[in-house]
Amino acid sequence: MATGVAVTTGYLVGSLPVAVLVGRRHDLDPRAVGDANPGYWNVRQHLGPRRAAPVFLGDVAKGVAAALVGVRAAPEGAWGVGYVAVGAAMVGHAWPLFAGFRGGRSILTWAGGTCVLAPVPAALAVGLFAAGAVGGRFEWGARAGVFVFPVAQLLIEGPHRSAATGALMSIIGMRFALAGSGDQR
Image (tube, rainbow, N blue to C red; front, side, top):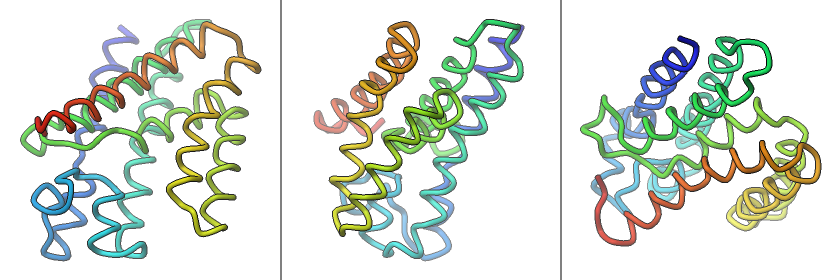
């Protein structure tokens, strides 16, 4: 029952097309410009950081909300339900029910979920991201944070949870591979 609630809620929350909704307010469909990715980076490139900030916050919030639902719905000791919920939110972000199944790459949704599921490794990753962003290297800070997170998690929380994180990160890899092949669906 807990897993069903986590998957359903995660997918529906993940399906909220934040970038498309923000883009509409500014006469922009992020699926029709730039790299056609309805995510923060594409919206930021076309609308600027200030106008794209709600996309950043909304996509992170989707992961946070899904993780919280999964953690709260899980029976005692069933930590994997939170990961399943975040995975469902990432799938919802990538193939959103409410946006014709044309979504983004799920990076920020993953980041939000990991802040709930693994707060200490997430804090280290966010610190690297912030250092890069403050230094004017937003993209390098983001990459450093993403790559350091699983290593920090392995050292702090052990192999089972870091393997679950690897499974979530494979969703991101799949979205990048599909984007590279020209398939945006």
